Image (tube, rainbow over all chains, first blue to last red; front, side, top):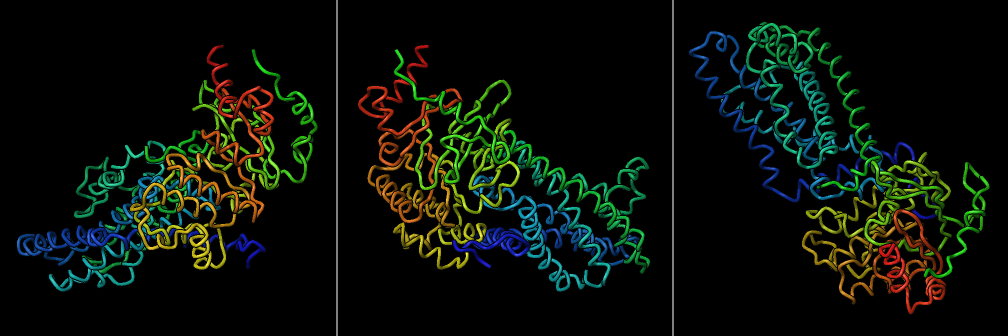
Length: 276
Length: 274
């Protein structure tokens, strides 16, 4: 519905319209550079190829890997879901910083939560572009299909995406607060989770004090759950619920942190000085 | 020696009666006011960038904020747009309290600054389309074509914004600022770094647009000739305060100078001499 000046009214449809406008903008950016699209798929593909060969070698030299062929490939693909989930969120935000566009955006009726939602949508798109080709090629190259994990795969995927978005919210808030000098956080920060989440090994491998840290990471429950399915053929609902509970907590806290930082940026003038 | 000041005491006195949520009654304060600012203050630590300013701008008026660098012009515009939170004071735009509910007003406002880029990798059409959707414009494709035709930039629509010349970019930025047919337009140095021909075209277009739509325009500029030509009211800022205000012709007469630039220089240098 429009008013006399041709403006659409406020409400849910207007909100969805603004969110989709932002998502459209990121799609335009993505489409404008084919090297970037290739890059999205390149790294997950290379990781999968590398770990595929390691798996082949280990299958004949390690009884643990031999028990569940493809465990390392599944691990690296799910790790990429987590990493790309965060990176897809943060890079879309960085596009606004690089093009000094935040003041233009926030003098429109765009609400911060609509902006966040558009970053989440683009994170999904970018993650699927990155990880799906690697997952499909793993079937061709190594005769391993991650889709054999069945329905739990959907729960693993979304739990990792939720954690990626939480991390993305914290990282983008820090970039907003500290400027582009902090942009390397978008590429670095996730790697601290890799050893703590037991991506490639059971959590029992960690010293006990690090196991306590792993216990508060949703990702550690996902990777343990993945191994339970692959080694024991068991779906650990308790692991999935623990991951989901932690994710709800972290998403709420990180969204609160982002919105608080946005408020601080309005108070201190940071929104006017983006890109510096 | 300072010239006789504007009757600012009268204005302040007339603004003291609260009305409508704390806004005051005065000669500037009636239903035709589109922008009303009262006691607006912004501090950065020990520095007071904007120091308790009051002003009002009527519907269809073009007003200017003048002042030397650091006088508080851009800070004031940023607070009007909601990009920056004031430490004290009130802002009402189109009847909306901008501190409590700015979004309703923002849909009917727009902004242009040479210091804020449009994404360079997107084509002009894509940029305008995204902003039209953000502002909730109905009939996006038709509006993009219309505003492009009005600004004589149809040929630019398919080009990436980053490949345009400074003059072309200014037209595109202006097109973005007009995409939602704003009732209030805030312009930060609209013709900065443009050649005289392009600057003149932009001024001419803005004047024609305002005559057609009755838009209220507030601009910050260092170009005094531009301000004399476009604006019916001028607010001269110094040290975060409105040092003087009035119609350009009245200010020139009051200070006994040849033009607004000389008035501006007098005020700035008076401060330096102090």
